Image (cartoon, rainbow, N blue to C red; front, side, top):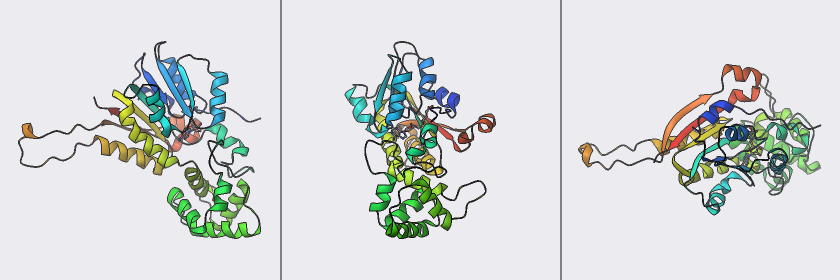
Length: 308
Ligand SMILES: C[S@@+](CC[C@H](N)C(=O)[O-])C[C@H]1O[C@@H](n2cnc3c(N)ncnc32)[C@H](O)[C@@H]1O
């Protein structure tokens, strides 16, 4: 049986960071199995609203079955469609907080049929939204060697990216590359694993990021948050690898740093430019959390507040 359980990471810290107003309007951009959503709903009153996104239909189906809460609106969509959807709801500039808990959920990873795992045989799919786009197998078939190498290098930091791409194309001359273990074994022939890390970790991460356009989704949504958030509205974002975290960090820094002002002008004459956000810092998971949830090891929570 496939487990539907996902243990929410940095649960208390990420919800506290939203500084919840009991009757506020909030977005959970990554519903998953609704752990964070439930935590938010528990602190809101009956006038509040929570709009939850997930591009995985199974997350939305789970929510429909398990969550019967009139304050919750469920949206099956990539979160980068947020600005259009929230605009249509007439809520632009009225959102009091957005939570993003990035990446894949345990039910996605644990279900071999989804193709995210290099440890279990399944179709090489890797789409969070299986209702659209190319699966990893389809993309690997259509892309040329250089495109594959670039993705594996850029999104996986994999030094052997060229070798891996060559091996993939060689394999495909004989037969289609269709399963997770075919890819994992092929990568293992080229890359040596480090300590407890499977040799295919970086390759799988890279292809998954590319297939789901994860970095573009993230940077587009961060930009949109400027218009979506109400004054003092919060961004609370948990990322799981350095490429993702760098995007969040740079966005917050760029939008919260006071630009340097021309020297020599009296302060009173200087047009102080108001930045969109205040940087409220970052946190990692506690030792205690890491001891009982391995996945939280790499989590970084960044928080920012929309200036009024
Ligand atoms: C780490 S899980 C979230 C877990 C959730 N916070 C919980 O407590 O159960 C990430 C979820 O976000 C979804 N997701 C990731 N990227 C997305 C995107 N760009 N648009 C919509 N949903 C996305 C995934 O399908 C997955 O269900």
